Amino acid sequence: KQEVTQIPAALSVPEGENLVLNCSFTDSAIYNLQWFRQDPGKGLTSLLLIQSSQREQTSGRLNASLDKSSGRSTLYIAASQPGDSATYLCAVRKEDTGNQFYFGTGTSLTVIP
Amino acid sequence: DTEVTQTPKHLVMGMTNKKSLKCEQHMGHRAMYWYKQKAKKPPELMFVYSYEKLSINESVPSRFSPECPNSSLLNLHLHALQPEDSALYLCASSHYRVGYTFGSGTRLTVV
Image (cartoon, rainbow over all chains, first blue to last red; front, side, top):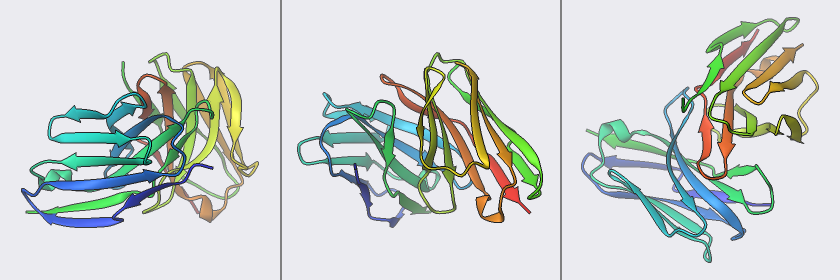
């Protein structure tokens, strides 16, 4: 079974810092990987989707990279803002499980004004 | 339309009640999901429908009964729930090119 781990579990940074969130997965046979943010009590908002053939995706201040062979993805957030405070989740879709995604354990981010 | 719509947003029900959660999408996604999420935990998969057929049931108790009437709708029927079933219930749909799209969830409280 695919195991997905996110480190750190919680992170607190001052406003303006650049930061990196990590996502590791045990089975490199993935179809794609998706990063989400979740505000307390709300649904998940998709941030970036990286297909297995891609190395990175960018959206505004966010950049996600994927290294399939080492089973890792990183989400880079530039010039962090208090509005970035949320829980960040990665989800991996394996090649052979049809429509099933496996979620990581999440990183709770607090950006201090 | 790029949204997944869930109703109701909040639901309080007694342990003897019967209620239903509804989910709708018009993006043409052929896979739809129900997830359960407890506080400070990642979502836990409950059910997956693929082309309107149940393809995954993650050993969910029978007091939760999913239904997919057509390719745009997904229901979750609730009966005789327990207080520990109180959680945020999330619906999602997916397409292999765009990944998951989630609804905003139903906050369920069982009293």
